[in-house]
Image (tube, rainbow, N blue to C red; front, side):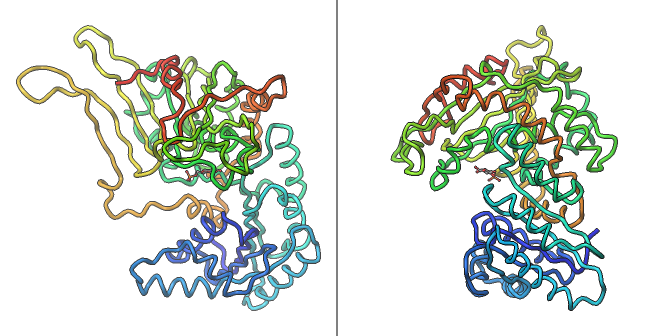
Amino acid sequence: VLKDNTIIIVFGASGDLAKKKTFPALFTLLRQDFLPRDVKIVGYARTKMDKEEFHKRITSYIKNPNDDPEIAAKIEKFKSISTYVPGDYDDGAAFDNLNQYLEEIESSYQSKERHRLFYLALPPSVFIPVCKNVKEHCYIKKNGINRIIIEKPFGKDLESARELLGTVKKYWSEDETFRIDHYLGKEMVKNLLVLRFANIALSAAWDKNSVSNVQITFKEPFGTEGRGGYFDEFGIIRDVLQNHLLQVLSVLAMERPVSFSAEDIRDEKVKVLRAIPPIEPKDTLLGQYVSANGKPGYLDDDTVPRNSVCPTYAATTLWIHNPRWEGVPFILKAGKALNEAKVEVRIQFKEVTQGIFSDISRNELVIRIQPSEAVYLKINAKTPGLQTRAMPTEMDLTYKRRFLHAKIPEAYEALILDALNGDHSNFVRHDELDVAWKIFTPILHWIDGLNGQRPRPVPYPYGSRGPKELEAFVEKYGFKRA
Ligand code: BG6
């Protein structure tokens, strides 16, 4: 339930994530009247700045191209409820100061009830001190609910993740903790549950008897420019596959939950993930982009170590050992500096029995997560006319065309609202993260050279479709191009 008397405290308020995602999402929620009545937003970071500077920063990504007076008025309202407190992250006294400030705000409430939502938009280095200091200095002990939102990276492998999450758990209960994987907030990822479980025509074909192979693809048209330092430490698998793509896979492959409650959904997600053995090097293709078309290569970035073999592209195949999916390859692919921006799921079905038709295309169900949300089914239909010939065509649900005026929410809008409502369905549970790391840790250790020489990624040109070896890779797992 949405609570009145809530303060949202954003740590890392001067950083990039807060500026680009957190504050714009909070603004949209305010604009659409989704925030609790009398909500206040307090930014906290090390940077010293006054209120004006802070307001400039938090509104810099909010657009009002036509000077719409309604939006302009809402921006003013947004500023009027937002303030800023500077302070260090490892200094208890600074958090006492913050707490005092929050109490001042709360002293004006009519009732005793008060709630605090702490949003940590922070780099990993200060993550633990903030979890600890907030708990020790800013936690409401009576008449209120405390919640904390945290974001990846949650460690670098199973061991470090366990250590990190174990420490967080010392201060924050599972119920209070909201671990963001922003892919779970995307409209089309949320739609997977409905598509799967509200359509018998789809659910009946959702298994190894009908499905040949599944691909989950993430493509970005830009490199790691400016983020090379961070990226080189993590690589594409930790950045995208182990979290975003694996989350999509788990919703795609899980059994039907008993209900749509957070625990029922997450129980099923954990169960399917537990049926996946660790990924093997033989099922993995690694790439790194090189300079092309006037664009710099990964190694041309000054913040990247000279001979780095960090993969900026990875394709890897996962196997689910359960009766539904035995033998069906789930291919996850992600890359930076490719030819386009696209995230999609492509389920390729098996061939129909040959005989009456020859040379017929396979059905494919494509769920385009972004850009331009769409679901389309590739089917065969009779070529219109007097001859009987089949041709491949599409049943197409492109959102822009079908839902003309629908506003598709940003992932962060949906997730912040869920956290305010105390709904954990679209957040990652502790055991879910643990099993995700179990699947990926051996391959990551192999890539990191922990068991020998580090494997060399194959080069691919900036702006290309990825490594040229990709085509043979997906064919190996039974994918057939139409
Ligand atoms: C982040 C990764 O988690 O997701 C980035 O760290 C990536 O490298 C981003 O660009 C992609 O998110 P979206 O919502 O733009 O697809």
